[in-house]
Image (cartoon, rainbow over the protein chains, first blue to last red):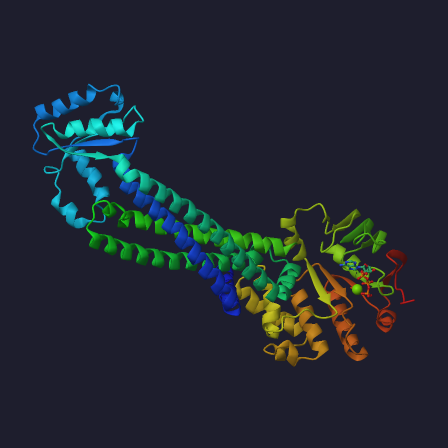
Length: 300
Length: 225
Ligand SMILES: Nc1ncnc2c1ncn2[C@@H]1O[C@H](COP(=O)(O)OP(=O)(O)OP(=O)(O)O)[C@@H](O)[C@H]1O
Ligand SMILES: [Mg+2]
C-alpha cells in the first residue's frame, strides 16, 4: 500500500515538472474561474444582505421610535389595519426591537461603527408592510400619512432602493455566473489536455504496465492525482484572490460611511464557507476531469 | 494451457489476419509459430493475452475463456503471461534493475519481494553484474535478456515471445534461444513467433505454420519448412 502511494506521488511530481507550462495554464485558468465563482457567491450574498429588509414583497416599512409606548404602537397597528384596500393585512408583520437588532447585524455588516452604536434598546422596531395595490403613488401617499403619527420615527419605501439595486444585482449575477461557467469549462479542458500530454509522454510505460498486468486504476491514479492537485492549487489561489478582493472592498465601503452600501459586505463566516466550496469544486473538477481523460486515453 | 477454437480476427474490413484457427498448447510445451511476414503470427500472440479480441471463436487460457471475462479481470490474466518483443520495449530512463522491478512494482508487490526476486531473475539471465546500467549501455542481446527477466520475474505460466531474436546476430540469438529453453524447462509454456529458420531447425520443437492467416501445418519436432 505504502509502495503504491509513494509511487503515485512520485509520478505526479515528475509529470508536474515535465509539463510546467501546460500545468501553469491549467492552474491559472482554474484559479480565475474559481475566483469568479466565488465572487458570484459573495456578490449575491451582499445584495441579499442589502435587500433583507425588503424580503417577501415588503414595499413599505414604518419605523417606530424606540421610546414609543405600547399604546402608540397599537395606534400605528390599528391605522395600518384600517387600510385593507391598499395593504395586505394578513401579511403585516411587526418586528420588535430584538428582531430588528438581529436584522441590523446583516444590514450594517460592513459598518462596524454604526453597528456599535446600536443596541436592542435604542434600535427602532418596525412594521413591514406588503401592499395589495400595485400603484406606487398610492403606497407613497399612505406612507406619508403615517409620518405624522406619534411614535413613528421614519417611513421607508422599497422603491427607493429596489429599482436600481435589484436590476444591477441581477445583471451582475447573470454575467458572473455565465463567465465562471465558461472559464470552468476552459479550465477542465486545459486539465484534460495536460493529462493527455502527460499520458503521451509516458505511453511506453503505460504500454508496459498494461502488458505486465497493472490495473487500470493503478495506471489512472497518478494522473487523477495530478488533475486533483492542479484543481486544488487553482482553488487555493482563488481563495487568496477572493480574500484580498473582499478585504479591499470592505475597507472601501467602511470609508464611504453610507448606510446602504454598508450592507454590501460579506463577513468572515460566509467567506470561509465560500472558500471551502471553491477548494471542493477545484479538487473535484480536477480529479474527475483528469480521471475521465485518463480513461479515455487508456483504452484497454 | 492455451486453446484456440475456430478463431477469426479481422482488422477493419480487409481479409482476416487470422482465419478459423484452432490449436491447443499443453502445459510446459514449447511452440514455434512460423510463416511469412503478415501471415498473422503476431496477431495470434496478441489474441492470447487479450490485446486483441476475435470476431468469432474462443480463446481459452488456463481454463478460462478470456474473451468472456470482464475488462477488470484482464490485468490478472496478464500477470500469468509474460511478453517478449523484437524491440525489447525497455524503459530507457530506468536501469536494468528498475526495468525489472517496474513489472513487480506496478502490480503492487511489496519492496522486500522486489529486493529478493529481481536479483534472482537477473542471475538467471546472466546480468547480475549489470543491474545498474541503462539500456543504452547494453548490447542488443543483453537488452533482450533484461526484457526476458522482466517477463519472467513474476513467474508466469506462459511466455509469449514475438521474434525475440529478430534484431540479433546468430550467435547472440542462439544464446537467447537457450535461455528461453531453460525457462521452458522450469515448466513455463512458451509460444514463440519467429522467422529464424536456423533456430527452428536446431531446436526440433513443435512448429505451427501460418499462411495468410490460416494454419497450414502443425508438426511435432518440426523444422522451419
Ligand atoms: N493493428 C493492426 N491494424 C490493422 N491491420 C493490422 C494490424 N496488425 C496487423 N495487421 C494486419 O494483419 C495481418 C497480420 O499481421 P501480423 O502482424 O499478425 O503478421 P506477422 O505474421 O506477425 O508478420 P511479421 O512476420 O511481419 O511480424 C497483416 O496483413 C497486417 O497488415
Ligand atoms: Mg509480427
